[in-house]
Length: 304
Image (tube, rainbow, N blue to C red; front, side, top):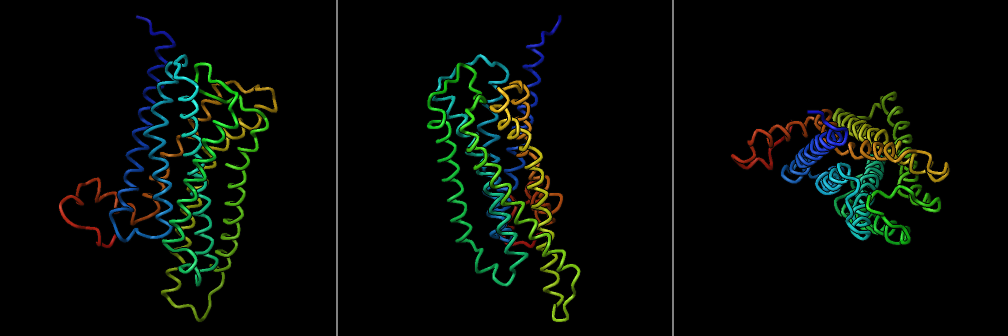
């Protein structure tokens, strides 16, 4: 019996979509559980990582499931309101991720470049306000773009709106390019200061201060990698989104759709980065996966 290309595509999308969704949910659930359960991980930086993981988890649990069904059958019609709701969640969660990364870069700037004032300027209350502003701003922008910026657009059954008017390129600039530039500026400054710290040995520096400085630099290096992975995954999609209106929509829709899936795949990688570079996250993951946390109270245990 010959398998038609449509059937092959259906199984391919179901396999890729299901695998991605399960990986995103399980990986980010590990991160969320670790930060919530272990008190050692209750730090301002980790609260921002927690917010990032929640956004990634919702993406895997909500957005990817819908798009998997849509990719299998592109003729599904859900209605314009439902279609725009789906795209609004997609845009909002993507913006939440990049704004969290932007705030993480600010956190790292104060930790490395202004260590003496770090604890007074970046504390739990400040980070809580940051997270609240991130989610509210992302929701307003995400739903505003789809329901106001595209109020005259219709989904025409497919529910993938990539033919965005050139006037809405401003939205891409505000939601992606501008935060990326801000992050790069902060990390460039951090890199400069970190190199100076590594090259200079002050006579008044104690072993404890030196150890703390190394920990902060290692944390910064890990979070730079997280940002780098984010850019590798999402930049191609936003470039296509920006260039398409300027080139008369010359980029085929399947290519744009493939680049969007590449962007969504970013939500898989962050838990692996944390587990590989952070020994305390690695220890927390092992305790959760092995079920050790269910056999006793380990909230105050010291993670290696």
